Amino acid sequence: MPGGAVRLADRVAVVTGAARGIGAAIAQRFAREGAFVHLLDNDVAPLEVLARDLSVEGLAAVGTPCDVSDEASVRAAVAAVLARHPHPHILVNNAGVNTHPASVTETPPEHWDQVLSTNLRGTYLVTRALVPHLTDGASVVHVASVLALEGAKAAAAYSASKGGLLALMRSMVADCSPRVRVNCLCPGPVQTEMFEAYLARVEDPEAERRRVVDALPLQRVGTVEDIANAALFLASEESSWITGHALVIDGGDSV
Image 1: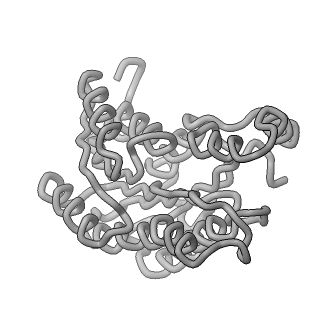
Image 2: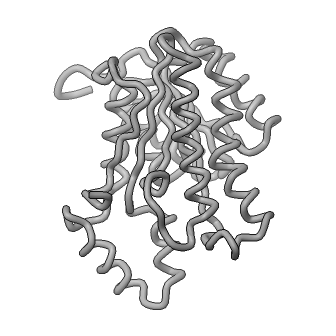
């Protein structure tokens, strides 16, 4: 890479939910820092576009269809990863949805199951399949949320799923140390399709956007690059003595 040494040279990374948003930004950043990136997502068309764009840029990446909520799909995707790279160095569990935001009493069981199946069970399935094959010194990063740490209206299933990722992280630290480090990212409001979908559900989207920004000490919503930068830190050797940490990236929202 121009401008100096890259931080993930000769590393192999697996990123779920990589087709767009935070996952795509993480995948791009890792590839530009020298990693070979396996892009996993169930949305095949943008996945193929991202893999092609990275290849045109001269970077190393391959897209593999994967529905993280489906065990057979996860097994097939992980097998494809391991056939090419038997011992990856980095796993980022980013795949997540918030399709039916509602309070606990207004959340039907099928909506609860859909969110938990992707956000929590999906992370479990990918982690269970891949962690035994990770190289010594590997880094696992779960993408959680500030809503794992604080309450919010109409976010019961999503908050529960992201809080579960923090508990899973702590359990994995106990089980996987010292061979594998495990940390979480806890983003606040970030400019993504999910954030735009949230705004679209309220009566006055622009007023709600202004309210969100005004409540942030740093006076802006986050960018996907903000989260990718933090993921790079936790994936790299710069964080080699950090495990079991929930890194909050929220513009001061949770202060």
